[in-house]
Image 1 (tube, one colour):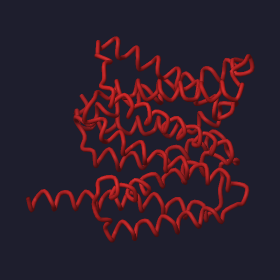
Image 2 (cartoon, one colour):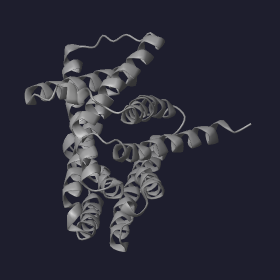
Image 3 (tube, one colour):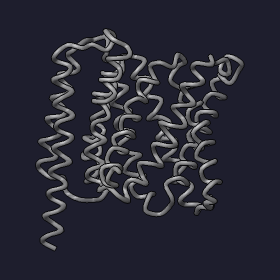
Length: 298
């Protein structure tokens, strides 16, 4: 029998592997980023709603909470649209390596969000991440659009992560997910209606794309989110955070095996990516040591 601790840790790596596979699915799906996210959010909403009905959770939330969830849902929708747009404008490797800056943006915004002073090491790490990005930008001009979209996506992910950090303390993760996914789906629907893109062309989707989107919505979205929150009962947030930083590594390796030479990049790209990921991990380690030291003093 496998020990519970090892089982939970392997489960966490499996979830991070699934998140890395999300980018691969985004490349495999042939439709544009916006309709892709629209389908994803609609199907994921239904999946989470099914889970809520199965567990008999109450969907009632306060008006203030509802407005916060709607706003966060719109941010998530924009995050996914720019993320998949980055993949289609460049490739999986470029998008994922650049998306690693999400933790850097979180560290940058966090002091203002929680009204505290910015620490010296956060500024140093920020400069190192910028240097890593500079190296990636120098790789090839054809990837600039993808890098910019991925940077916007990373910034949006930092914003909704900080917002969810407060919302998760007041409501069930599945209920939060339902309202955020539904809000994002409604927002994209209104945008498509405004543009006049709700037509037969939007509904013409191949069976292969539909299968990939269903996997994306059910396994990579609904299941992965609920399972990751459940794991927080058994694994420390610090361990979860460090393991999640392996997402671009898993995704880049998967993309290389699936797409071959189209994902092969020059040495400078991998150097820049390694600098960003290493800095993000180092930031997590320093933060955890400071937290332990503070708790010991108190």
